[in-house]
Length: 490
Ligand code: BG6
Image (tube, rainbow, N blue to C red; front, side, top):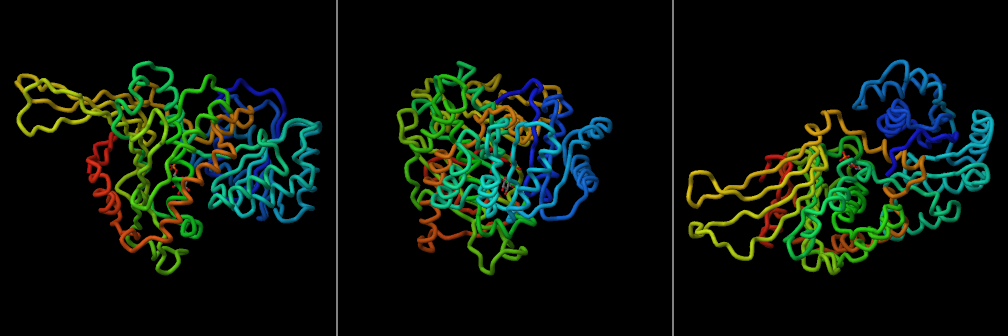
């Protein structure tokens, strides 16, 4: 994770699939904001390509609207004028070899001299192998005249087999060091801060294990439904869309051992070990649901059984985490948006206070709030003043907005794009991590295919917290779902 000084070497950034949402909503705003902060290389060009017809000016205008409407920062006019002069568009068909040759000569003309190149695959996933192979055929992956890197968007395959095949295609053209598989959750400040919080403070790490922690909950809840993405989503479902990538990545940050250095591979080695230690998940360790009305959305197959909500319980079979359950849940059309990690601590071994009979002591828990109200909260017990026996849970809170001047946090794509330009892959997913993550998810998907109706998809109301079975599921273990970052306890 580098917050670079201005890079000195000239670089071209080529975005494949540039007419899509991601380019206007995320990529160009992120690059522009980094430009305004003086962090892009002094000499750079950004070239978008897709099948649609745009002139350079039309493309610039489309991007300007994206920055103005969608970015969480002001778009300074003068800077935009300068930046947009480095934005270009070249129409091209991803399936045509000749269009890669045309792209290469367009780039060479712009560049004037050999420079670095970063390719961004923002296309439909089915096109990833084609772009990679065509780049290879056109000699555009060769590093003789500067580095060549490629960023690949999710979804990375739809199971172990397809992920492995995709990795093989990529490795037939690019070395692993040139490959940056992006997971935007790792670009979120608060996700990165999990490692800083754990390994830069000595207060919590001694308790961060099976001796003190009773269980861990990871929640990524969304209030939006599938919106216009049903075509993709109905084939993917919540587990491929959110668990294989974002939730398992968060899990690795919460559970990994401290690496000796912060070098990309040292960090990723530790993350991979966590994934490899996850015990196979059984169907009894899962709950799935679908929100009411999902099947009526355009693009959803009749009678679709695609889950839009899932909760999983998993165990990490290693020294630190033996027998500690990790509960992961995510869903769409839930009551509100929140992404958080809750670490619940064990009860004290002996309570010496004369608490009333039947009194249930509340557990301490720590909440790492990823979004939207980014921060960290610690809940602990305290004596209610002027009483003899009463206790109450109170909170110690840290909010980014209060401690860091209230500026919105940078969008997750900003640090990630910068890191790829700087050659820092620590926040990108390595091929073995991808394969290990699918190794966890495949059996869940398979178990659901084979499951009896008792483990089928339960319908849940929009604006609720998911299927009722999700409640029963965690309560059977003696716990309850926590919301440590807001007051929406269920
Ligand atoms: C994407 C998923 O990866 O993450 C979407 O494909 C989901 O379905 C999105 O809505 C959530 O991201 P965030 O940053 O809004 O939590």
